[in-house]
Image (tube, rainbow, N blue to C red; front, top):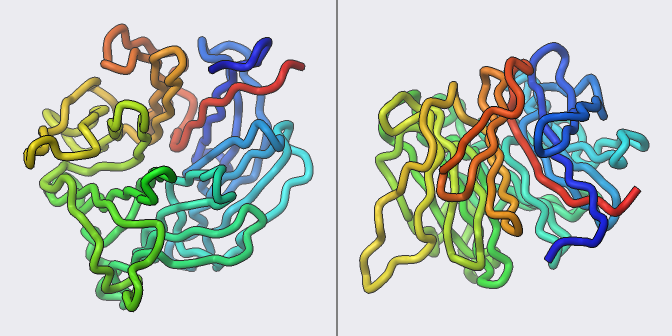
Length: 301
């Protein structure tokens, strides 16, 4: 249900040229820079109720200085809620409103993590490796994240090396099984494997459908995909390719009320399409190296 008089905006991260967050209308017009000087931003979420933007900064992967920041919708009151070094190279970010938690994947940290909205109570939920040798194994790198609060589960991607066909999408519970540790959870399910390079995730919980971008090479990579979140009669349908010909697809955001999605790629394009991938169109082009994207309905001005 949409808010009467709501203002629709897209919030887009540019990792190049010093790093910034800008917002546009869903047709690509009205571009406004909100925050400059972001250290390789990657994941973004908007809390329109409380008037905040949250985003991750990958920082310098060799320095272990990733962070998470928050600002007002106009860029004011900018603050680091997870300071530099509080996470290694944070990637996609999700805001789970019911529990007031932020979830994110930490690529070189080889972790899935979460914290309270003020940055307190940082937890590691999944740990896929710890040593420097482990870190060189890109099959351990956690990138995309999605949360299903109703069923108490989260989903994440492990992208694997470039075009190696080792990418995975996995699922586990938001509550750690008793006696388990992040490095040895007993409830992890592999939903899909053998993927080119799955990146960002977005769920449609009403239809139990998972959408994701893949930055690997064609024919299965540089695509937007979707698949059922659950197996039917013991059988899980293979992913359906919805869009092709991205130039290293990264960010994805869903507008479920209007049946559309928005996608970014590293070539600097922002695309809009219907949820089935039909009627794709570029609403912005050559905007720098684009990463995360969020769709939000803001209160009337």
